Length: 373
Image (cartoon, rainbow, N blue to C red; front, side, top):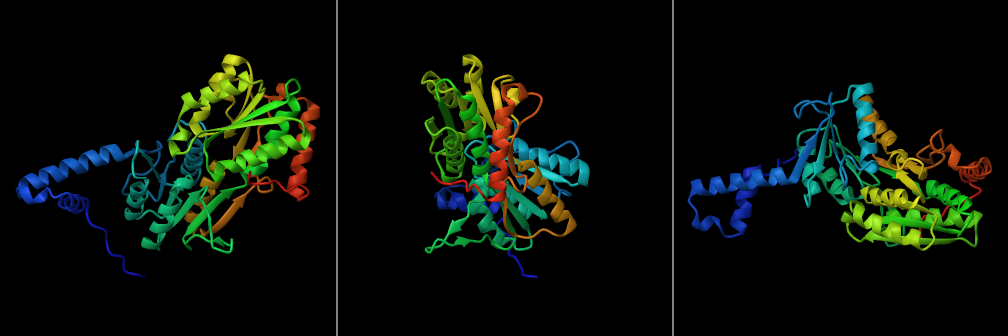
């Protein structure tokens, strides 16, 4: 087994930082220690807020560590899906799981590094934003398994996909396929103005997949429909700005849009507020978001974040975890849309039949859904 040099201790890192700032030359050793300790305490408080499920293990015996994405728990979307999958693994598999939620402006890499240094068997980063950090840490901790949900794959100069490190599982979803179906559904129920909307969080390729699939689904069933698409911003904060989400939604509804699909994390909470206020329709994302505006949520485009999280934990426990690229679409049950007793009355049988037909055509390969705008 390769020998791994331990990283500097927390106090050593703090001392180095002070030296770099030129402060240690004028302070006594005791005062330096006090200042370093105070700085580290403040950093730890600001950096991380750790949540554990009721039956999760302590830091000493936890075997899986999960660092949540922007917005943290309670986003009723992406992060809550990952938490639900981990909670199932705790209850059904007896897994001991530790959760870390980075604070405002926190260094997310520190959360991943903390878990790897503590000897976790598996460290999961929830969200594309962890991609570079997971790749770097995987080389530092070759005996640790890592998984990245929505891991962003890079390509070489010839356009070939660069695989992740061998101990990293890139868990990818074909969001465009589920978005295609809800796009078709939105267009089929928008009979008055033939205008539908899309609200994205951060303006990045990952969210463009949602928009591209949505547009394609709309155009498939309604070539003369109009899609109005807007994004909440260009930074990760765009995924946690409900005020901006409501502003964009109200603007679109005022332009005649009848249904809006969002892929914006907790920013989407603003969309649901606007849908309730205007009696228009919204489409949720990642998980069933019907509870956010009962009677106003036409459906939700669901991603199996809970399922892939559970699966990764299960594979580690069984000793079958392998790095590589894993893709989940309609065929694998990784994406889909909600149709149940709570929204059935909003979707005519003929519309449901048409959407199901499109679903089968995607699974069979008859329809190729675009993933770029």
